[in-house]
Length: 570
View (cartoon, rainbow, N blue to C red):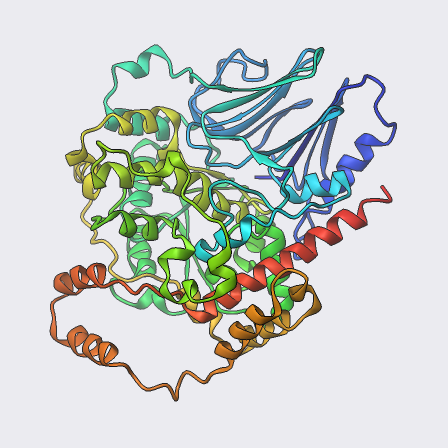
């Protein structure tokens, strides 16, 4: 998905260079490792929109823009308040009376907005908004969330003035009286869908997606979700049509029996897809350049860097070889067997600083205010499985997965057919016993003739391994020792982290608990080990992870400050 900047002015007389400024800002969002397409820009009265690196799969009609994909192409999606289609998308639309912006039911794409007495700015990029405003007001409330989750958390943005449009919500501006409202969306799913069961709706989402197979590829793994899409694509494709699939991972994992990449390779052979495997080997580019690209592309919303330390070479290749969109298997079924609320929050990336024993001992971190929003707390009548699925839908997808998608959007579009509004609505109405352990997906796969085994081993390295590498540690220490760091964090806190990071790990003797864990790991069956792992889950945050997340805060504040200063002259 291109990054979009969408602006409506209150006054009819808008600055004469506004379109030029907006277009320039979106062009500055392009990655440094590709020759991006020229920005798209359109103006209609008081509304201006611009897209960075626009692709042919993106729908544009003047200042009306559809990012993603809708399933019913017959109705007009460009008229405000008229039609809220089935699909997986973000829509920006306006006329002389109204500006309206909304996403799909789960807000799988994040839209940010800024609103004052003179202007409404909506964007899929916080950097774009800050660039346009030419100033930056850091919201310190993100600090505890980045430290405990590696993300911005459920409530805030980098800038205290910028807000997120909630899921299943339409932002509507009535231009004449300059009144902004957030209204719940009732999606138009069509009469034919009401009589369909879940499997039929999944079939419909894949069969009616109307995507050009020459421009799209399926991100294929060894799991259930992307396999379901593969089998359905194979079922509905024409005889001459060739499905394109891609997989990435550590070098040689394609040949490691039972790995994600190996199973994906076997599936590609069985279904005769045009398959490509990409290595996630670490780039030889300077570490500070790799980090800056990672932070600018994803805007510091997530710390999952493992698949991007190759310098985004995968996504550069896809863009330069006419892959315009990626199909993903993101969906609403979780394989987690929850042991507790804490177990669910940890799995979904919703930990608090107070969940980690070592973080609570640091005075600065212990002083930070942080809480689970009321709407994400477990309800009285909610069992653990229901709570798990609600946190997946209301937090994991719109916050964590949306941030991961953001990293790829500067290069390609994305469509998640299993997150289409009609499917999400149906899954939420299903009993627990059918949602648990992906039973519905397994049943559909069997009906489609699946015979290939499922992956037992991942194909990418844990991000914690990268955080501990020597060149990464050096970069972390450099940032923690900087003046910029001292402007954000207390010196005593920085010194505590720096001292711990410098301690050699090899010389540290194992605790009795670690010796017991090592012995049990060899002696016990996998099923028992998993149960024990949940029951005695470590309650400490690795110091290298803490250091990396502090570095993200320092570097992102610097990037955003530079963004605001550079655009004052525009």
